Length: 377
Image (cartoon, rainbow, N blue to C red; front, side, top):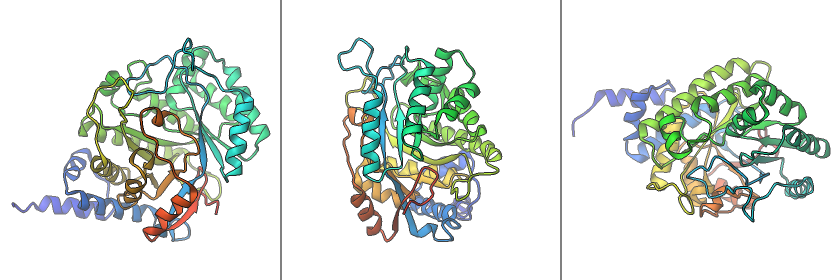
């Protein structure tokens, strides 16, 4: 084996918390998995060192919430999605306000603090329908967060409502929207998006929604769905675009709410692998090894992100737990309800007790959090 001093310098650069570039990321990607994981864990420690009065490295957090898909009607027909329906399908639906109330009441009874509300791109729902839904939830359940509507939905709203994004997002926020999920990120490379979801928002669209939302004071998560037709270089480009947007959004974060644990408007990064069952996308899937490698690289590259969530929903409890040693500091949601990934053949489930056990077994303290990473208990 030929000794490579430059690789040692790169390892030290990561260990010291310095920013890396795409070429360096590609070199890191090919390190032995355990070595890459150790570097990612070091970056987690640096990111959390000053959190929770200096105890951030002792804590692993989770959230109790519920995924609510308000409609499964969608007109973008993504090849990787097994959830969508067209209006004429017998099992197509739009949620009623009474159904929404029941779901939220059940969530609150289980200690939940928010719903993650997303849906298909329904061609006929009006802006007023959405505003009425948001106002109804906010008035009936004050203090309960609505984490809703992915960027691709907002691009769809822009087309259907014929209004600019800042007007739509501002009106949604005024009606009760509290934060935005990062769904629809997939891979932020248009060549890839054209292959897997050609009718969906392109990369610049997705980032524009996040930029407008962050400028208007809303926080969001950032995601990556990988392991289909993209290359490793595409994944790194995706990370580069997220990091650049977070750099920009940090300028909007002055005057954040007291106790806010997320200085950037992106609260966390979450990645998961493509789930192929019942979908139209014919692509080789990847397993836990590739998932852990990509999450670790994400933690290292996204030096301006405080939090990384483990994706136990697609990987299962055991790998979700292992991911806490590969850069993640959060186990995400217990997923009281999940419909999209499960339609593609993945049906892992967890309770709060499961979450706490997995966290304690690694020597960390489990703590429930809210969307802004403030502790609930």
